Image (cartoon, rainbow, N blue to C red; front, side, top):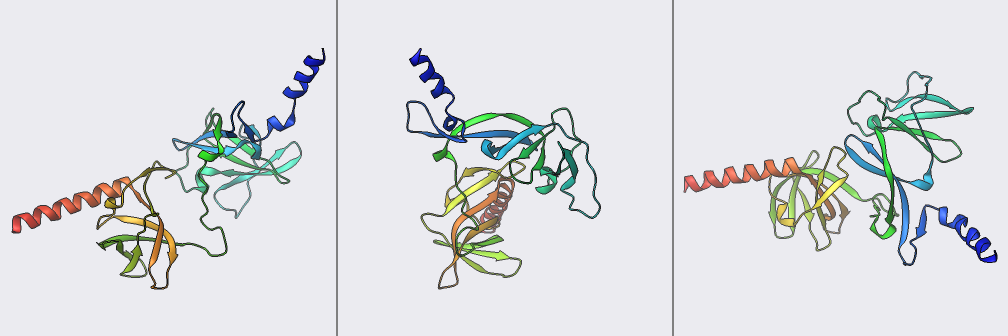
Length: 243
């Protein structure tokens, strides 16, 4: 009987219900995620931050508000703003259907986010969750969008809307990747050889004493890469004919 009570206490230990927990018989710490669907992509929220999931409620519409704020709902006597994640992320709007759900976030003032549907619960090792420190710390990173106009060794010459030539410095730790999907949340690691003239890129980094942008991250779209390759192939063919 004592063993049975002890087992019951172990099973009801509240520490096992937290978002981050240790996997049984291993040293791996797991994080519980709520995976939802949006514009054909699978995204996740930490389960500890989610209060509940509800069907789209009746809304009181407000004038002169951002397009992402769909309205206010009455959640058991509490006024809750309901926000469209599609509008917030500048994605095309779609009509709500039977799969549409509202994820209510935990907090003193609840907020509901409208998503296309709920997919599943997922336990993932915390060391597999990539932390994005962009914008964190005492100095903000520099973020530039531009087109590669040339390259010399570890230097890329970038044309931006504000400058015809920005020198971007590549290092061994520069993370180069091609973004994929409607939300650009999936990435495919690429080599620095993919950084060819004519390719539109987004560079994140910090300026050095020589006024060069030392790149920590470089991102580009797959279709932009294919276009840049086609342009380079056409230039090479033209040059070969001319010679």
